[in-house]
Image 1 (tube, rainbow, N blue to C red):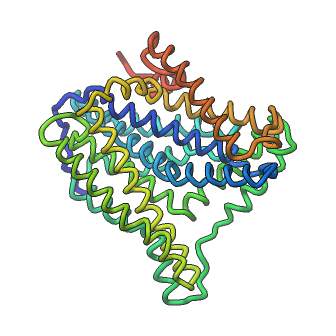
Image 2 (image 1 turned 60 degrees about the vertical axis):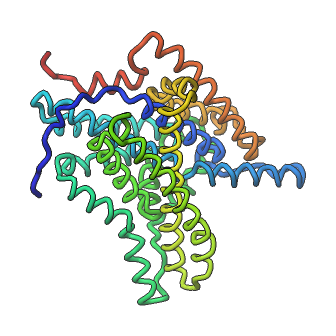
Image 3 (image 1 turned 30 degrees about the horizontal axis):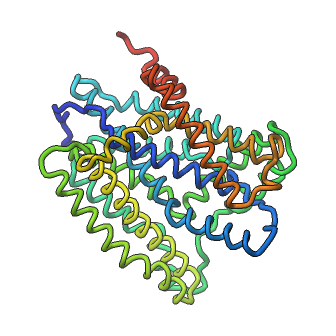
Length: 396
């Protein structure tokens, strides 16, 4: 591969709107995790038909608005951060790639720590995907755009779609994630904290990887990392040049795309009788629909921040976004202590609505803490630890 990358020579100042979006994303991720009771999915029977209806409405609306969109924003901003770190060091004549590899090893350790509490950890997967994009950080824009287009086509789902058309008996990709997750339930419902930790590492780690492959998340994560790198190179999050006009076009385009993709996602997979083809179409159309919604959120927040007085309110979210790693790990500990047997065991009493409200309460508490913490510190606790360990051994 021919590398044509050169340091930008432009200052990569702190992007407040990126911190705001990161805060929105981590809050949305936490709400999803809490309504799922941290991958537990064992809920009490509703006490009435009314509560059953309310619970279903809360569940459906939460997943429709947040699932697949918040993680996409989070992953995209991960790629943006990689670009900024790499470019800042390149401007000093330093190759950041070896240091980033070490940074990803550290992220794996954070992921293993997270698995001690929550078997649905994404940090380890992010670290692996982060290693995969190291060779691409200096690739030309043409190479990156080509890879983005390829990954947008969702090659795994495309292959299975073709296989299903050739042989209708072909089964959808199943690597056994359900078996791994099923093996964890006993520790959550009956075990102590040690049982949960052992099950999280033993079964949660492989479960996350095979689930991500089965549902297209591995290729999608790499895709969003690359999109983040391109956003960094084009400086689209800065209010300069015609950037806001571009964001307006993205906003309008996302609305049109969503209007087309939503009915396709609802009706097309159900109309196909071949199971493998139907499943592949469902995964692909769902991802494209989610991307259109993600772009609407990102462009809308960016335009509100730069064009309206909403900036004064949105900026209050920034401290929460700056501490996203601390908040992510914190929600795993808090959620496990609330729902699992070793803690309060609230899975026995909380349906979807109550679990959602507990997620809201968790976010509020974290938000208050983050606002206070960032007034006295440059980084969050885990962010500072990650930064310190990243630059360990560097000569001053």
